[in-house]
Length: 602
Image (cartoon, rainbow, N blue to C red; front, side, top):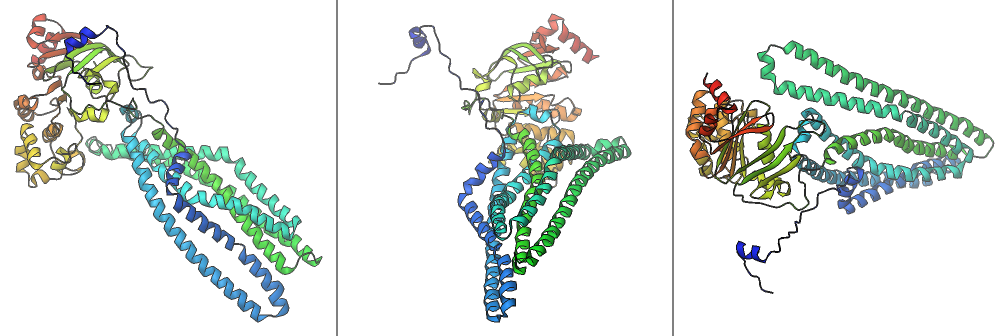
């Protein structure tokens, strides 16, 4: 039973030559998003939900008091002129009103407090799932469309939290009120049911049209949001091109489509509610007309007729709410579909128990990798194979669209290869935890996104516990410390949205410092210096040996001078590696690399 440690040679001597490869199963049984997703989370507050339902039930029971009170006053008090009876009934009714008010206040407070907690939990879970979605999800959708889908959470939560309770009680008490009405008059009850049935039929009949107009309104609203986000984000370009007028025209067209879709929806709802309101008034008139006949015939007293009319009103009110709620239910169904586009999309984690590789050495291997962005598109990478040992540097060059950046995205596991395998430290990248993997990779792009906040906050974004000394250290390595120290606010200088208060070179050096803050074992420069001025590029190149020290360094560049000192250079063309080797070897080869180099030298 003892554990014995074996060396590699001993292990292979004992091995039969056959291996069993164990892999974690792929996540393929994701629970589909729907109303159950909300109810499951709401039921974690079982006690509160029960208390609210109980309070609401008692309040509905009080609805039976008023008609009976009115009947007693008309048939007993007025007939017998009994002031003492009136005083007792009035006092009891006043006490009932006060008790109902207090109960209502308590219920509303408890429910508001609980729904606030539910909102926080649902919002947190939604953003957590959204952040874990693969990059392809965001690339295939506009920002405004995604934001519009996220906002659907409010309408669904509002429907379930506030309306579902009333739906349950309205359905229950509709039967109670019908039963009470039947005790007074079967004939009048059938009249009331007939009118309510016609009203319900109208709403059910317009449901298909209603759903289509709701969907049209959402699509037009999402399109307007997307356009507004793009316009505001690109406002500098808009002003540079002096196209404010044409942008205004396009915005008005988008807004016009949204307004028309909103009008079409409102018009349909107004027509339906107008018919329903007219039928409800006609029902009241018919009940009074036939009811007075029953009073004349002595089958009902005046008090009973008025009480029946009040019960009929209390029966029609919840049924009308249910009918009106049918429209809101259609809206909620569409909201579920839209939000389901987010929550039904599998997260990028491909196995249920990914390997947590907290610290990597930086060994990278591509083995016959092919990649296409979608099954219906052509291959972007074709049979890519190479190996980078820890601490080595590799330059990747080639014309635009040759697949250079796609290779780095596969290393980051932003995409998964279509075929072949990518290994990090000998482990298939598909089995690695993407979050932990990326913590070991630093990336600097041609255009880096700086978040609204201070320089210090942006550098330490991926390492919230980083000390000021560590922030200054990586800033010096990135060549950023000197210009930061000259700023009035130093490291506390506010950079503005997307780093608007800084120059391109300054933003790039801050991005390099941010990439170094976690001391990553793999560092990727993806056209990191191609758009910089000579001074900024010189500062970065001067510190490059310190920047890449102890790291596996991948650099993509158009300027071939940037890759001359790499341990190996991969030359890509149309998604294939056409040449590889050191700078001197490739120049001696006299092939594609040399022709690119000679062209750059003029």
